[in-house]
Image (cartoon, rainbow, N blue to C red):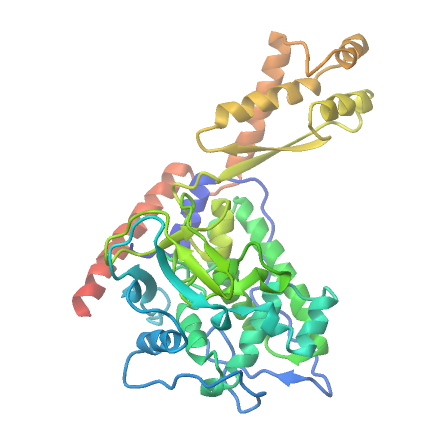
Length: 459
């Protein structure tokens, strides 16, 4: 599939998520910390093309020798590294998908895991030894990082990012050198060759105007900044490097089930970003003893990319974490917030009725694609409750079972007008219409298809 630009990705989210509030976007660079007299580690700056900081001679002992690069490609080096440590050959391989250059000719082809032979549902596509999986077990081996984690000052993702940054400073001496090189090559790009909005420029973020995704980007930026500020006590590095490493880890971390907390968050070679995410897939990476395996949920022909489930995430969350949207996402939704008026003289009685029916004084209603009528039917009794003004009617409702608000043409018109006004105000927050968004997406698709064909022709 040809990649799309941040503009097209934003338009795709906008088309399915015309949102509500607009917050000013936060700076794209985190603040530079004050230098300390005795930092435990100093991370050097790196070239803008790499996700993780440059290598350096300052390093601790590596867990084991890395496979030295040969005359073969970097992909072969990475696969050789896996196979030399127990990956059985034969069922999957890594292939490249050329992409048009989006940023000054710096984008490299995307790599993905594909089937080498025909596979059937229930087949084990691959199995990776736990010794090749980066988990918090390894991070906890570093006392400085472990202290921050146990004191709830850093999240699991931040600790994994720091660990990889620490390992990369060792260069080819690091056990993880081939894997880190592979992550560097992807640079946090998703399967459509688009980075997370956390790495977009200010002008690119303007495409999200009106979408609730922009609020989420701002909130995630602030959370990363808070964690970065905690590093001021231990490390000195540019904030942009930490953010790039965090986003890289965020785009490929796997949440393993039925394992210890120290293994819950894992970076699995041959896992994301080399695997393709889908919302309607059931295949998952699972821990099985001392290995992580992938059992496919559908048949594959040789050469087809292997896909896995991305979890019950909305499209806005998929864009934020992985830089893509899924048009067939059954978990995509738009949240509508309704609330009871706290200044209403009968507020307490209405709150009791709402609670009796499983609702809150401030209630979110999730509208799923194809299930709009069901959500509206659930909302109407709640909205009608807000228009009750007669104390006798309120007492009748309190003494009855369920939500038995009286229905009248006047109340129904007021409720529907309120709902229409709310939705219109949200749509008005977007600078473009749905038709204009779809036209923008199509124009980008045409451009990128042309670039894609030119790229294939020149390869």
